[in-house]
Image 1 (tube, rainbow, N blue to C red):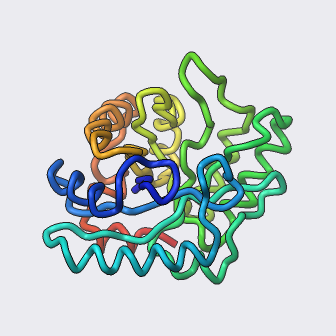
Image 2 (image 1 turned 120 degrees about the vertical axis):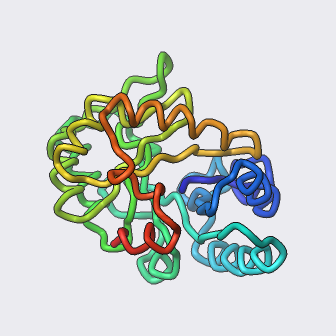
Length: 230
């Protein structure tokens, strides 16, 4: 449910990523390229997102046996607003939101920032919730108890990011999310056709947090998975 293509900072086209996902045995994937405030990743604005949605429709006509869903990895601004308007977000199947800047905010401010984004009715999943890069970047200071409580209240899914350098959420928070009845998504964060194999690391991480199949939205069919979103 988190896949980047050559529209932003991924290496492969939508078609190539879809074919790779199908080869990996996946029944569906969500294209979630970055959005405009992430300039270093050539993030898309509203107009470009609409153009990408049309391309996804075209690619879907060419490939059978796998469903391509339309999404975006939307940037959470410093004040908790998003960098894409609600009108455009409402047209997407799946909206992931994530923090990519201002990592050193005080805990109370960072928590408030993320909660505001989660309260947006279009935000389905909080991607890599603590922002950690193992042995490279500490997680930002955030009150995970409050984030989990907000996730439950707003029906926001928390991501278990399978990228080996992230494995974010960590096991302790996964267990707390499961105990609170919060749904999780296991995502590869694929930036190239070879990255779908990372899903196995996410599954291992989920098991460390005592996750079961019922706790993870993308163990369901794509129709069921969408029905669990906001």
